[in-house]
Length: 477
Image 1 (cartoon, helix red, strand yellow):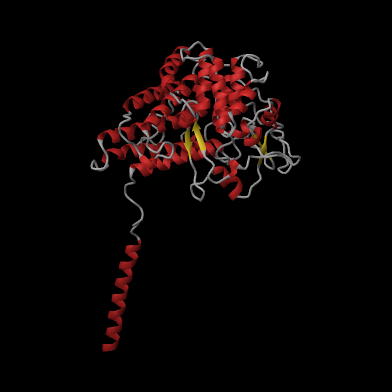
Image 2: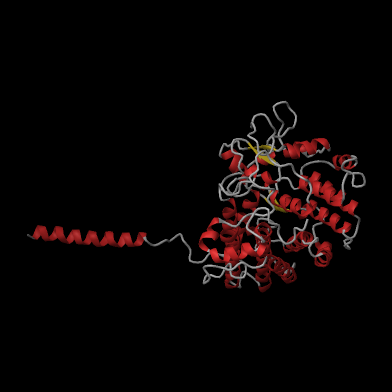
């Protein structure tokens, strides 16, 4: 009996110990209750750069829509099929959930940081920089879909947010940008090493913010020339002045912070894309020195592209260049070449930005060639060509500037898509088997149609129908 009691007592003690250990296992010791603002900001910033740089057909098909690349085996996206993979929903969710929401949490937690290590001026800079990033992300949404959830988008108590008018959102973004730029103090720091674009350099954020303001201003130049003029003339003196100001995100050589194109195409071993003949043939006709930086040689040692929308052979045509496939190949959110080509257009429209349309055009083209590894002599020779020289190239200023922006925005498909919609140049041929006309917007995500149906229907009616061919408010022609 005594022996049995000892066994039972020992069993109870063991049970107690096991129960305690199991309870301890439920404690998530590695899950913080509050994430530091710099970490939230860094995560949101990288997510933004990743989604804009990715070549995954589940997220980013802008290189295909703009015929910089085309596909091999699976040709849906090159033929404007957005629904098979539910691409609009993937972009929508990433921007709202992984970027805009994280940036909002960054704002919420910035004031709670230890004042011993963060001055009032630094905290103010962090709030302003975070808002500039949020404006950038919202601009992608409104310039992709039109009317979007905005005023109620981040309200946790509103499960079914209303859609705000696209123009109203757009003009509010411009106001926010002005407020954030005015709040920046270049004598104080911001996020330091947690800022993957500028390393916390606030003077660079002043430059970037004004360059973004230029971009947003020129987009509405046809719709509201007076507003565009005011915005652009205010931003131009403080926008990018050289490639040293470029908004560059430098990826690492080892995962998980590697170039998304390397992840999509090299690490995965996929052979999904080749150069599109539309871009390659244009560059060859113009004797563009960037063609060797953009693409690999084909099987004959030259440069050639596949037919957009066709099932092209990966081994036959040029593909992305070796440098683009490096794990640490950097990404651009905005660059000096874009700024100068915006200023060229602004000069043509009679805005007071200094210089001439030709001088800004030449500077933009030269900046792009230089960034990709060409020389000043290469740029000068290229610009002297009869079909490139601003005085002799065919077409009006929209044709000249639009074509050169399309070339310069290689690997930045979203911006190329925006300028093609806005300038109507270059005029791309239809792919082999298009499911629609050229997409000038994305349709709303399927989840919105299902879960937020009343607001979805209201928004669809307001913009003129939820179709890829429904033009946004600024797209007049």
